[in-house]
Image 1 (cartoon, rainbow, N blue to C red):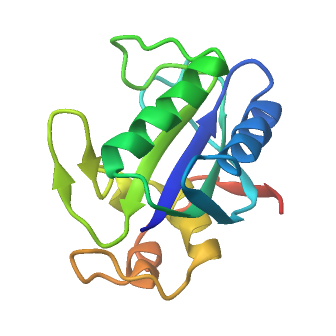
Image 2: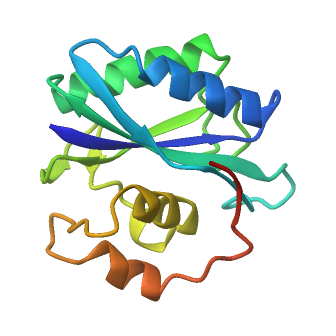
Length: 160
């Protein structure tokens, strides 16, 4: 299953947090690391009284189920100091989200795929476009079409 994982951090040296997470994604069980986007600097969603984020997207080919993949991602988050809080958009050392899982649509208590907010999140769409500019989403929309209507909101590519 080709899957795309969103990587985000705005605490405890966010560039290093993102790089470490990407390195750990190389070693997921029953998975092959395909590629990662550049790192991007983005403004925070939600409360603006927090540091800016470092974001990236990683492409993997996995034999894990979506829930098994989620469990592995949450282990990586915890190992890098992630503390889950009620504030959905607060600061965090690491946030790993399954953006797409093959061409599947999943909606259950633990997981929504495609990621519920991906259509309006420049820090997801532009790194995803860097990895696959011909990508079609499960609803048939072309990624190029989404990025054509998504403002960059100060998104800056900082490294490849």
